Image (tube, rainbow, N blue to C red; front, side, top):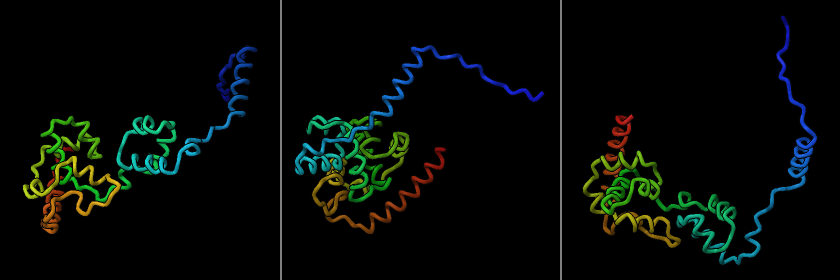
Length: 188
């Protein structure tokens, strides 16, 4: 009644045992290599790589431009990602206006989602929402906004045209946020 269930193991052949021992020896002897790319780069090149990461260039493009390993570029991209260095976060109302501008230019949903930093389902939801007219009139074109937010230089007003009433924008964004929240709840 108290019998234990045991699994019968096949005995390893001498070749299999030798292969397992060789693999264990290899794993024990080889330590992970350190990424040595920084040692052959000038400080100016390192700074340019960090700027390229902040500006949102792809890892493969940076790798090709500076002749460094992909592992090094990905390591730098983790520390210098564009979201962390973005000057002002975009609200969903602003992203909705930008999505409509992108749609007018004929961009795909996936490309819009990548540029705006949201998923494609949210992009399609924002495209169905009406955009406040004042926001549409006062916002800069989407490519200029993205360039301003990711640029190395300081931009005083990266999203709106000069002379925009900030108080009115805040009220409109607040109202649009409530409408978007309702639309998200209804879509679930």
